Amino acid sequence: MSVQEIFNDKVPARLADPTEGETMRAIDAVFQFELSGDEAGSWYIDLKAGSCGAGEHDDPDCTVKMDSEDFKDLYSGKAQGTALFMTGKLQVEGNMGLALKLGELMG
Image (cartoon, rainbow, N blue to C red; front, side):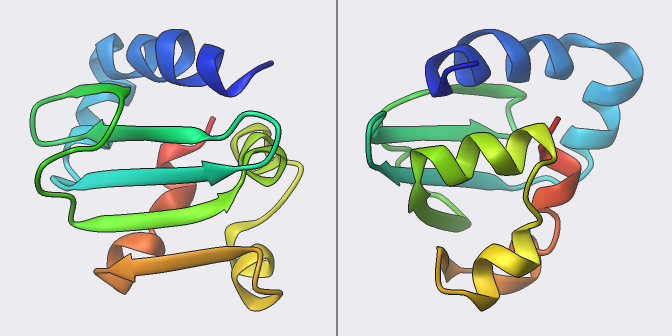
């Protein structure tokens, strides 16, 4: 699964799901993802509007920086956000409390 598939297919499908989408939108925040590595790029998940997309959001509440391979592992459950953070593979800017909710965003 590619980063693009996650942001173009997986996350929008989850946001559209009545139960899962409601749970995700309850976080009421905007996450910006700045990924490096093989699939480098910028993406956001706007839980206030219930949308996501490529590029930079105007007003993110929490920015997460990491390698694209680590992001795919985090999304698939092969890696834990806390472990990535503690080893310096995941950096957070903005609201640190929201970073703790990353697990709820991942598949």
